[in-house]
Image 1 (cartoon, rainbow, N blue to C red):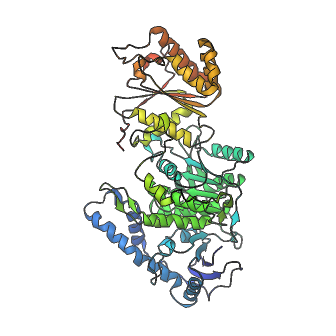
Image 2: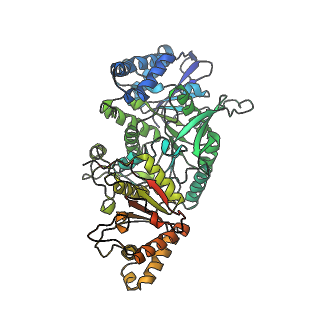
Image 3: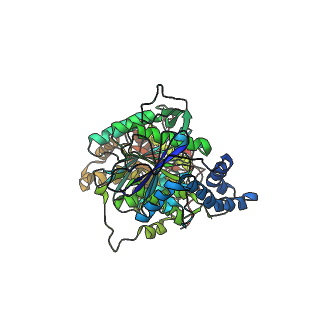
Amino acid sequence: MPDRLLIDLAAHGRASVIPWRQGELPAGAAGEPQPVTWPLDGDALEELRWYLEDYLRAPFGVYESRGPQTAARLGEWGEAVFGAVFGQGAPRDAYKEARARTAGVQLMFRSGAPEWLALPWELMRDPARELPLALEVAGIDRSIPAAELGASFEVAGGRLRVLMVISRPAGAGDVGFQMIARPLLARLEAVRGQVDLVVLRPPTLDALAAVLKQAQEAGEPFQIVHFDGHGVLADHRLAGAPAAGMYRAAGPEGVLVFQGPDGGADRVPASRVAQVLAAAQVPVVVLNACQSGAVGKELEAAVATRLLQGGAASVVAMAYSVYAVAAAEFMAAFYERLFAGDTISAAVTAGRQQLFRHDCRPSPKGELPLADWLVPVHYLRRDVRFPGLIASRSAAEPSLEDALDRLRDADRAGDGGVLAPVGTFTGRDGLFYELETAARLQHVIVLHGPAGTGKTELAKAFGRWWQHTGGVERPEWVFWHSFEPGLASFGLPGVVSEVGLAVFGPDFARLEEADRTGVVEQFLRDRRALLIWDNFESVYSLPDAAVGSLDEAGREYMRGFLHRLAVGARSTVLITSRTTETWLDQSGQAMLRRIPGAACSPPRGS
């Protein structure tokens, strides 16, 4: 644990600065509690929010100059925040002494009032130093009274397991389904060590509890739960007076919006989420920004502090809405430091520094700089380390920066082989969400649309996504088959042979054809697999006149196979076609899920 300066913020507006040297108990307060007046008014806080969240959406006209002007004021605002806490007297002397002892001092803001913790303390800047403190000290953190602020504790295990909850109750009309997850997956390729990123399916509270319990019982617990969704402030006030020295939120409680069992929004109080996480002994929680503006800041504090109160050791949150590329850059550096044996607090600082060094974000005018290094915030009850993750980088292995340089301009989530992307995939998240939902609820899906709209690349990307995000719904097998007229593998027997040989080996070829189909069909009923059938229009709907399509017997064979899978299989068949393939419906009963794919974006060249 580095040297700390513990800043106790009382609800009545007075602060005590308490020096806390490494290896010692906290000393007494430096002088008497001093009155603290937050120096930024509502207009300044709104300007900060606008700069971080809205500026790059439309950097035109007056906003083109307003953005850089606001960025230039960050230093002025930071010095005012610094002066409010360490302006003069004993607090100033304590700060100087701590900085003289070590550059790695950790600033800890502790309060029982979420409104104090919600303020952007990361702005703080020492007028005598070049950088904001958040970029050069060991950490700027928040905590609550009665938290166990001793030395960091160590979590066993040599593999980091992250459970990501992507909650989109508004469906395809919601925030992009993979807004954070897709670039994060790509960035994790650059991080040494081993990370299991598992997406919770379905994103319900009951599923969260069940998956955490199952993992814990299997001896493979999740150390981090990452919630990527929305939140609100609700009037779930706690009754009764708080115990002396304890945190007790008097205002409305933060609520995280999961999906309900039947779809739609399920607004779950943070205290209830905390109970689920505590039961599974999850030490670290990561929260994406849930709402913007002042309400969002209060929400972030209300949710994070309630999770700490419920037993979470460490909560990393995004205090404002965050760009996907920024979140992914932050997480890459964050995990890099965890693999080096650092604490969560130090890893958050490393993530902020990464955002500072690489500050270009997308806008309608191309990439423009944005000082969003102050967006990540850290709440802690006890700091956390994962010593089992420590891995040394060989001399031949690229540094994190070198690896990220190769990834920043390309989506490299693919694993090569038949699912490797052609160019850079730009399929839309709305379709990803529809496919994700359909693959959980139906077993045969037809993705249809005109030629050239990117159906093939979307299907490949979806196959890669399912392979890489784990969980009980993840397919154990992913098979790709393109229907090419004139080839021996054109009909269902060719598909069956490919699957059977891959699963059962050469002995499968010795079976009679009818037996082969039965064996593969049983495998697909019992096991979780994803079959992607591309170019399916050539089977019947749009055959090549020079080659022909399947005859009636072949089509009936194919149709019966798909319908048996549709009513009783664990596997899913994803078909891409230029038509809706209505001939697959038997007796007028539509047992297939059809998704228009015309909104797909074609791939860009590398």
